[in-house]
Length: 367
Ligand SMILES: [Fe+2]
Ligand SMILES: [Fe+2]
Image (cartoon, rainbow, N blue to C red):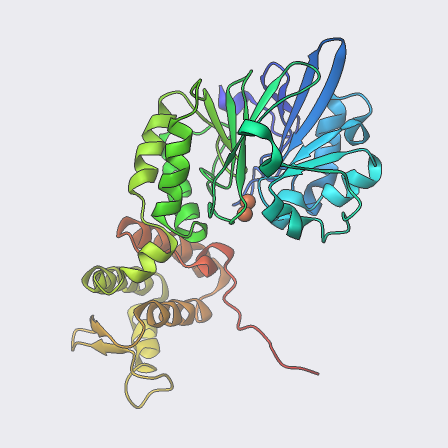
């Protein structure tokens, strides 16, 4: 079914709920949602997580197709937090409709309004009694703050009629194919959370709040990746509760040294397959005491890593960056997903430069 959905168009997910996102053929898709409320002889429109500046044309085209008058007719916008991929288009929307009201937490808005929106009408989630609002159309919305998932002021929004919970970056995933998640989306969700979520504790707090929702949500709709429905909700919530992320991974790495060394040797096996054993031998020469780099690795006669000295994450990162530096674009395309897969399988941190492939040294020189 999913491959029949044309992602170049808006897609109706439930009555009055439309997906108007973008970037579905990229590593990090962006899900934006348009909610059209009708009732009590009136209409209201709510745009959830509007999206980055780059997606303005796509958003405009998709919204216009389902809402006569397009973006100028949107009167409410909700932002989970202030990241550019969530609110980039918002300053433009506020110019198209000066009555547009933004809904967010105060912690989010304090930073978000600095994008030229200090005069924009704003409604603070924090001041909503019982964290539920009833719209003039009769529809109810509930706000569920999710502190540190991943920003201090992050907040989910629950549409009590469609029973869709819009979760922001929480449950977001990379490398999703299609609009609706399947079990195979978990790998991308896991990688995204290991990178961006600070701690398992923050995730557990959020999951507890989801479990307490009454009625329970029928769908979790994150800002990135696949939309989660049915049995996948419980499955992914259970996995999320056990997932070590961010600081959990960094602070437990010393215990993980054997796994790190084994993972590194497995990665070096892949690098030998792709770059050739001679090239790996040459590169590892840099790490010998008389080489260009400090002796961060102890190598056996068999060229296997036996020990990592100093800060292990930094040492592994340095080595992976050097492997990529000596790889062609084609070799990088083969190497990056293989390295990521090995790191994730072993519960090790997926370095973000493997995702962005930004392996160029940053030029900090001042002219
Ligand atoms: Fe974010
Ligand atoms: Fe995001």
